Image (cartoon, rainbow, N blue to C red):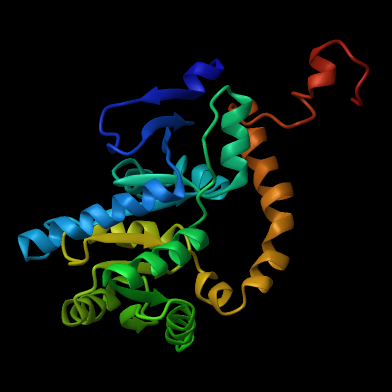
Amino acid sequence: MNASDLFSRRTKGAPPVATRHVLLGVPVDDVTTHEALAFLAAAIERRRVHGQAPAHCAQVVTLNPEMLMAARRDAALHEAIQTAALVVADGIGIVLAARLLGVRLRERVTGVDLLEAFAGLAAERGFRIFLLGAPPGVARVAGEALVRRHPGLVVAGSYAGSPAAEAAETILARLAAARPDALFVAFGNPAQERWLAARRGRIGAAGSHGAGGACWRCRISPSWWVWRHAGCALAGCCRRAGHEVCYPHGGSAVRHHPTRERGGRGKP
């Protein structure tokens, strides 16, 4: 399997704002933060023109290396990503792995940055957001922090909830009452991606985005997020994605050590 097979251009089903590629069987869109925001805003405006909830919520997936690897084993997660309206490169490992295979994604679009930027846009244009997930009370405090940074932002609701199937009807009832334009879910991946994909036709919001299990906490203390995750993004994520892309058959780094393959001395 060569690089072009591992990371091939995919055009069928790609959203109009981006070129869609496929990395190890999982789609990723070459999209900037500005384009992702425009994509969500257009979905919301279409809802407003029609004056009713959309038949299906436009789901944005923020793809990182862990999610990509999990999707190769998890059929439900793979289907959720495959059918998402937009898949952005959240992890630096995705960006670097793509570059190793000759594809330059224009921008890393993290879920945290997308949420923050959308909050600003929503404040300007009157979009209503709903924050779902994290421990009780955290989403509410995060919403208050977003409102302080973006005066005029309407947080239509917040709720801890749960990705468990038995909690779904309660969550959907709250969403129906709140009528948000966009839903941000922090159940952690892959639970949030699977939860959103299974309920796109019932959410009622025009757009949705899995924001990660720690997202609401990082909104309260951005410096904590940087301190906690910067090292992981560069060391762990890149290593996992890069290794899997270069060695897709699951061989160890020792067996496929590049020095040994070139005839070098490498350790046995």
